[in-house]
Length: 333
Image (cartoon, rainbow, N blue to C red; front, side, top):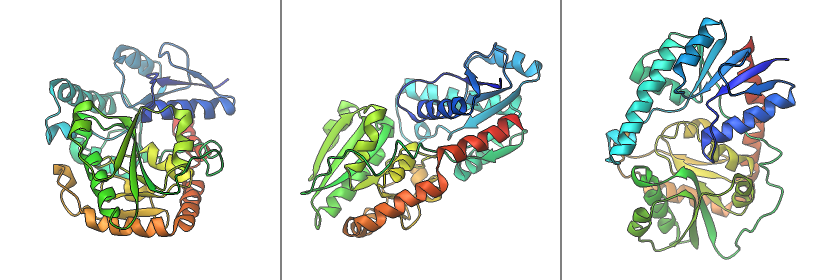
């Protein structure tokens, strides 16, 4: 039986953990065994970002096992905005470790978007190993417009769905609330935030519209939450390839945001709106709130049309089977 080692075994609700679970499910459905132990005999190894087990990775390479590294974006916010000593040290150490693995251990590199590929190659040079881009996928049977929902009829709900909007990562939260406030001149609005937000940030947030903080939401609740909203705002600045956006589209939820990172690769004009940032996102400058608010208003007025197009976009480009097949070609062929 074919066996693939996936390392590290990331747990939690973030993007890497979500990818691991989806990928393992897809492999097992194809009769492929999964291990997380680099010492196990396997046909290929997928390193999800990085690992501290460099000696075991080196021994696997010596045994002739193909090593594929899946890369997300580069840690960068700490270079623009003070985020504390612990966050800064971890971020810079993480960049160096990922770059070291990419340059010294990998036989193939998978970038999650064209934006990520260009970013890594601009900052750390072109990888020695052959590289490809594979966009993330989603289970279209779980993330679907059909199912339980509690969508309010008296207010338009803007959803933020992020792993963390705490401390140095909170810029997008303030921008989202500004967009909602601008929209509220014509449309009743509320903002619902699913993801960790530190208390200091919550206290700083003074808003004319209702803002509800749900904290970290169980993965099983995300489809219902998406179906119960009218818009999703992509709050990450320079998003590498956000699973939350793909999951929202699959649930028929239109996505709005600014043209930074990979967002334009994911969201087409009929499935939401992505407008020019209007400033320098790399310096975390304030974006063009007015232009995004005007475009978002059209989505609120044409919900059925945009929701159908959002689902169609997910079905045509972001199916889980398509993603897994692409990874298997890199891992085994």
